[in-house]
Image 1 (cartoon, rainbow, N blue to C red):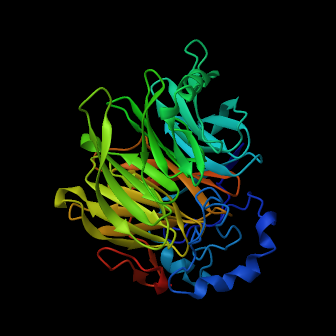
Image 2 (tube, rainbow, N blue to C red; image 1 turned 180 degrees about the horizontal axis):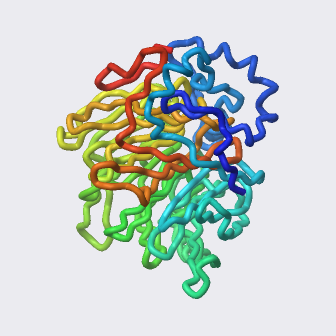
Image 3 (tube, rainbow, N blue to C red; image 1 turned 90 degrees about the vertical axis):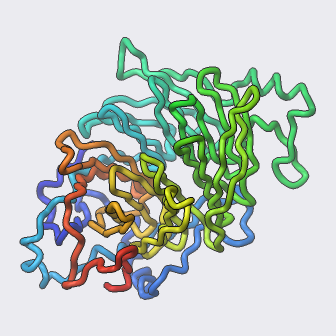
Length: 446
């Protein structure tokens, strides 16, 4: 259902207070015990243990579900001095259906698709439930849309394909599974199709043997990429639903894969690395060749996103830091963005904005200028659980001089929140302090 937020308390600057309509009874018991965790200047939280195998648990299962947001408590005495700040970025409303934690979002043509750890994929239109379709696999880890097809990645390692019925747009029909049963049977006959997938265990190269963590689409080439905790990413031909390549990419779970311009693909992993791959189109099928490692650190890489032009690639990590690289400078390191206390779980890019969702229950909104200097515009609060996924679409009121976006955030509090975000929003301020660092904004200033 849609929760109206017209009765919410006033906003301080560009920060929105928690929605009182969302039940928080499942987290309040431990709230007092967790407040002390925010005293550290940088978070020591890591989504992965050093000796953890790729399939033993997700970053969500290991995240601090009961943490309180460091942004939600402000000095009420400052209300008067903030009343004159333009109220541009803020909460529109909430979509709530008590059936599972929200793990994935996708939006296209005014429709929002939500995936959770229930068996349902729900479709929303104009902030109201429009349709739903059911998968027997349970947890929906990723959703991506291509034309009339919808691809969903699941905990069981399969990609499921759905088609919108043209005669009835509110009806969705299952169109197949990647890989198909016939492809599995055909491949199983030939011993050469078996590869080592874990120690002393072999499996078909066309199948993921662990949870799918991320999906990405190269629309121009008709290629679907699936990343998995089995340490590989696979490439699928959308037209015939065939797996055309499997790449052993990392030494631990692959948490993110994103495609970019000119056949470049980026992958991020729990092993702490971000790698660059180049697609080569010689031969019958394209092959992906390793190019370089952009990052090699101890903490897990949890999310990647590339700007629409492909000029900047962003990486979120379990230490709460966003790193970025600039393609026009031969992918040299551009700097870091520091706005979170806990692990970053998702990233999204739109226009000159990049957004980061975190286990600390907040969303940071950054604006990049033409010199790649990033300014923190807003910290959006309101979720009662970690922010697991983000989706963005252009606002209908957006203009060339004032680009506006509708941002959807899915959380482990079982809700989706809808935000209005403008690139013209003023820089976030509180207690007469602002983001005066050209590249990063340090949350320790609070």
